[in-house]
Length: 349
Image (cartoon, rainbow, N blue to C red):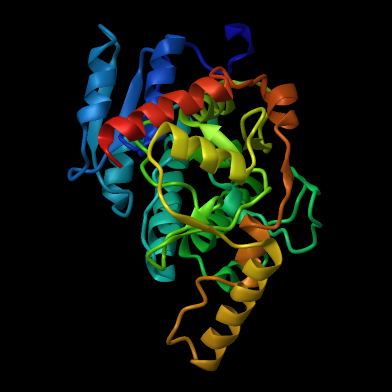
């Protein structure tokens, strides 16, 4: 398998967002694969407990911790030297469009400029999201895969995260075209696992004080964090995949109704109200109209574009990741859900 890698085990790999939910698992996966020259970029204010536990469990692992902020060009220049592969997972959680742009696009630009100046980069992996997809033209039951369109006007989704990720991908592709950046884009679905507390909004929302179950019979594109991390690592080291995009979603994903029933049984029971598909669409449309009438005083957080992206009732394919990337979910869904529910139950969420 290592003969298919673009780097040796001693080559330098930079992981941004390495103390995050997915990032820490990426570091663990790299160490499990035997890579011995890792640089972990972390913020000075970040919680390093989990990451330190992982690093300490591997002896003589050759992991270097670098504190910095990607908004600082100097910090990027400090983190990038010698990196053969960059796995870019750092992402801001800002809820405003300017904040998301700053922490998804400006940070990525600073990192790319620093890395390309070094001249050693063999692969840049941009970890994106299913949030970038536009599903307005898809019908219920259609398959969402890497050939589907992304949002042309992400600002109309009312989601700063979607906007930031779409613009980030545009930047990476632009650098690929104009500056010969060797890149791969990874788009995980709804990543879950120990360390993730909230139920994905694709199942439902609790914005109004009661859990509104919006998903119904829709399939939820779950990706267990260990499986997602392995896909990110393979995207960084596999030969012959520059310029490719890979969706990451597990096998045998449940419907929203199945997931919610298992969650209530495995973690805790709570009151939820099922909102039928057509009614949820109507509510999003009314919210959208009121936001327009109020001239933005009530942000269009729920709108038809978001409804189409999260609650339309699509199917999801991981075929490309399996056939080209050589990936498959290492942790089966039943085991993944068991681990997740155990964590939720013991943390009292």
